[in-house]
Length: 376
Ligand SMILES: *Cc1c(COP(=O)(O)O)cnc(C)c1O
Image (cartoon, rainbow, N blue to C red; front, side, top):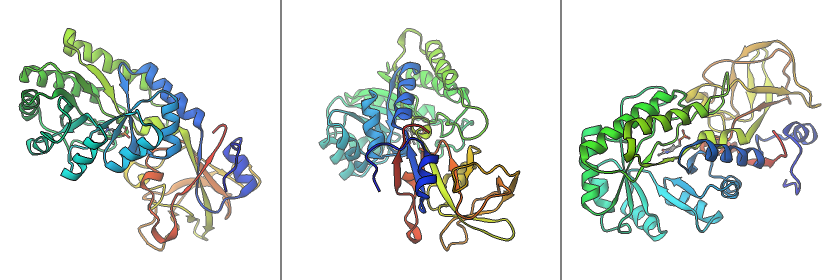
């Protein structure tokens, strides 16, 4: 049920309503503060990768915080942005598009595209506005991310230089882009790409209008808070070193690191088995799906029905999701208190990214409820 005023915090809501379905608690203040920190710290234009969380309240609060450009991958994402802002700039940075998708983007006035092969570039020629910015996507075998995006998209430096020359020759505005891979904590991943981008521009004899350094900035899942300022500084210094006076304007497109901290997620314990295993009302088909790919977060509290934290010594518990599928199980045991009971809630921080957007309605479950809170 929708509450007119925001709830003060997640625990108050949990203790009062004992929600039986999983809930995402959203702090608009937290999201706007993160957006402002990105804009203050990143040495260029900050855009938001919509796929991380396309919720209307996310997009509207980012616009309110001054984010006016968005990285979109599909017409549906373009319409989601248009629903909250008629003026926001759209960067269509999915390098593979059907002709119908290209036509729809052009109809929406999109003037920024990425490409990673001649065939996809040909689809854009004559179909998108003259002079549009075309960013050639570069891929290098770099490590440092939780999973690597270079395996699917992007060109090696030599063919990237050829495509950049073709972009220039057809009268488009030439730029380069890359994406180091998601949950990337190593500043050198950006550093290697920036050095390669400068080489590609030199080899092509092209002055870049912009260099888009992608997303991939790490969110706080386990251990210490990632040092984003160090990544921003490294990017700025490396661009100055590699491009000198011919430095392009920078763009970044964070998804995860922009939205993760703005949401905490509560899931309920449905059953505790005699062997200590726990059944939750959400699992790998819902908001916990990323645990299978990049590991479990350690920012988890267990809240008893009276709102108090369970303090029993942690034991590793097998965790099952709510569906009737046997693969609906977390890959590794999760450390949870010895005194956990049926009806408790797990409250997990930093869960704004790739939770709602990846949740499925399989078996009638899934992550649907969002509750606004004054603080997390
Ligand atoms: C997914 C994606 C992003 C966002 O990645 P995060 O790891 O969530 O920051 C940015 N740009 C492109 C092209 C992407 O595919």
